[in-house]
Image (cartoon, rainbow, N blue to C red; front, side, top):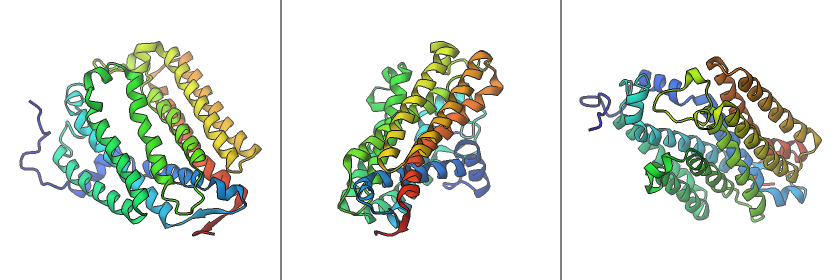
Length: 321
């Protein structure tokens, strides 16, 4: 029977010091805020593709800011879900993590998560019924993730399919955030292309995050390096970086990006390949952090790059031009 990590007698709400310590370990706020802003900005820019090609500047407004807040709160909700799903496994294999060791309890995370859901619904509703319905689809998809699409054992045995099914939520989120753009000239094709670029970018994060040196493998914890070998996992991660760079690069060009944009995304991708090759040649536990870093930076570049390219090419204004 599952323990509740010392929850009996614990207050419903975590203390500020304990919650800050939890966030530092499991939900780094600056990095997550940057990712949320990047996805919101990229999706919002992709939704304006028709207007941009007609000569309008990039619109930046309160709806975009609200989308970034929603994305941040949504990513926190996913962390809360993961803590619940993984509690028993973490208690057995990684008891030093914050929830198994009792830094915060599952009940406390549920309380904070409920507030996060309420805030997301309120912000989504403020953008209008269409945007609200699309955002409810995002929350519904996260609910399916929480129950592992009603096939937890089957899905967990298929690490690649697991990664795709869970990373796809970022594509769904991108569509919902792009729908917050209120102008009539929404470009579904460009927004769909942007959402598609998110999938390989975030699957790459999962692959490289779970590519370890042999001595760093943990008994009972699945990894791509265990299944494919270090070189096989590295090759898969590199291919995913390339796929997301091509898709994201194309979206950026559609929004006005030129040679500078393409050179930038190519440079970030090449850096990723170099780090992967270094790790594959000499796999060591100390090198794993670099794989995580390149995957995260690459995802940020693919997410935010199209918006930056659009702003450089067309300028940006606050509000609807």
